[in-house]
Length: 115
Image (cartoon, rainbow, N blue to C red; front, side):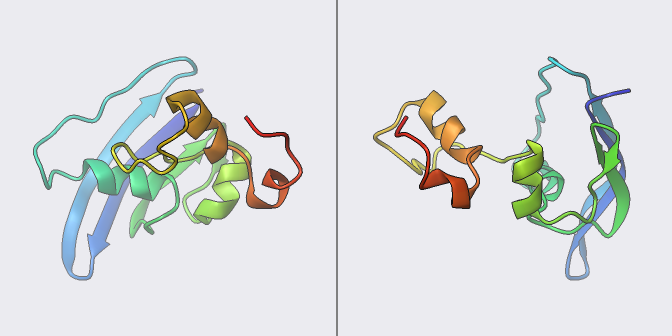
């Protein structure tokens, strides 16, 4: 069983179809790249997997659990997060520190030691 399975995913912005039936698997420890031209749906695919955009059809299965309709804030506590590139969210932190910040749910962030 793959760590992440995306099956027949379709996403719309209003009446415009942005993703047309994409399917792929990501195995534990595997690195996968989404490559395509501007407007091809790379960001939309990632936003849908991380719960920021709702899929119209298809399924997203993470570690054997269907997370297609799970909101993004709940996915973070399950270990699914989106770290946008180039946004300089915390520009004074290293890449590793930025990634760690994305994995700390808000209510526990106040209780943790600084990175």
